[in-house]
Length: 355
Image (tube, rainbow, N blue to C red; front, top):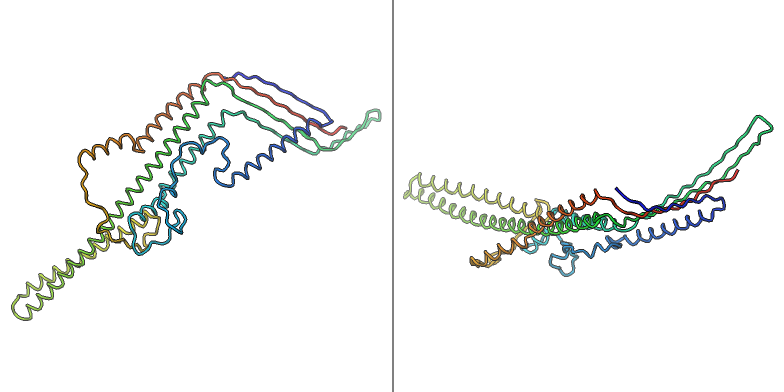
């Protein structure tokens, strides 16, 4: 339900002064829109509603360490020693999860601007032009005959402004702002997920590499034992069963080495996918003998971390923002069932050739 205060003005003249004024207004509006479109060449450079002033998370390019002589997130192929920090930086920049979450935050920011724009008045216009030609004739000489031709023009400007709606627009703005907060916190949660996944896969690759080295060492020892058993057999101080047991142990060690190398290549492929690379791209891990200090956390520190996570974890903050957005949506729906007061005004002008 809505209450309207209308002001309608209709002008129809052949002199076309009002039509020219309206046409000039259209040309002026078109020029301003062209300037605005040119200002939007950089992304979000034109921001009349101040959406960019809303709290937004830092983009990934500002979260990764800066490498001298290289653009943010502009990584070269992996070098000879890939450390954990570089692996995490590559994953943050190229993982689809972070890119999708950041794009979703940008979409929610645009929706907030759309909700803010509903508070502003609306100005719309229509401009029509056509060429007309008509002729009339009559078989009777007493009746007049006429014809005319020329352009026909019509222009209209309409103004509308909702001045009171029982808080419907404010509720929509609050809903959009809470969804923006939820999107921002979801982006932060995506960053944490990528950090955790990449670190887990990195240490899995490190562990698999260590298992390969241990398997090769065990295979070498088993090979030496098999050679010693064969030499004892030739000397007559060992039986054939001893040599067969040594050869069996060597074959089993060789099989474990093959399994360890297979698991190592799978771990490297998983890590490469996390970093946005092909699974078969060569990746060489850095020396991780002293990568992480082995310091145990006291129980009180663990409890403090849990309490802090309950208060500041991005997923919990996103869930709270989603709840607030749902409550704001309910307020908006209730307000939309109530009447609203708006101002509407329009001016129009038309011309057609005179017969």
